Amino acid sequence: MSNKPIGIFDSGVGGTSIWKEIHQLLPHEHTIYLSDSINAPYGPKGKERITELSIKNTELLLKKDCKLIVVACNTATTNAIDYLRQNYSIPFIGIEPAIKPAALHTQTKAIGILATKGTLTSALFSKTSGKFAKDIKVIEREGKGIVELIESGKLNSDEMKALLAEYIQPMLDANIDHLVLGCTHYPYLVPILLELLPKHVKIIDSGEAVARQTKAVLEKHNLLNITRVSPKTEFYTNGNIGVMHSLLEQKNSVEFLKF
Ligand code: DGL
Image 1 (cartoon, rainbow, N blue to C red):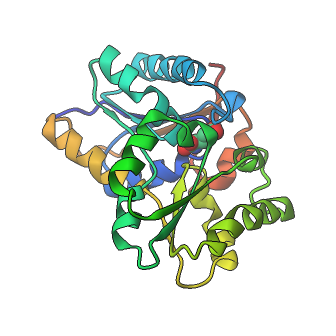
Image 2 (cartoon, rainbow, N blue to C red):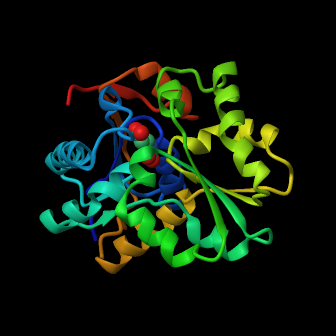
């Protein structure tokens, strides 16, 4: 039983999509969200640098007395979560592209995966796709430039639409029926993707599963907050406060913090 906060970090504002799922499923939990926007995107950085940045974010959340950390970033999870789990004693929850459900349900035997370079080139990703998708066609595309556009407030821009249309075209040519969103920034693209994709293509993301896993791990470690005080949510960014505000539906306040 613990009323300490859950810590959540991402390379930027994208992980707020995960925060929303966690907050909805676990409304009594205190949460602290860190957006390392100044260092976004993590995708093109190598494993070593991604691990260094993940350590920095973890240390800050530990200073704020978090009981569990959600690595709300596919790139940081696939490159650094093993290190974090080996070196810190609190539980870590990660996020990876949801290849398994897509591979299980595809009728056309073709699925698309949009993710960052760091995720697509990671050992964890190739292990998961080797395990679950070896008998189907997997069309992988790096979402180059997408995180940068979202971080600079250009989510609903013509530039974004053009990039997405370009990235999904080879997937449509291969007759995919599932598109896996392998980056926590991408759930914010769903309205645009729905315009671009034929109706039968299902979009899959892992946000809800991460929230369920967070709940299960808190239960297992007896860490659920059972006090009924109103939950506190704290959002910190070392980048643009306005961009983060625009993605948070409620009027949660966001603080600028150098880290
Ligand atoms: N939200 C991060 C992810 O899930 C974006 C990575 C990046 O900054 O390139 O991978």
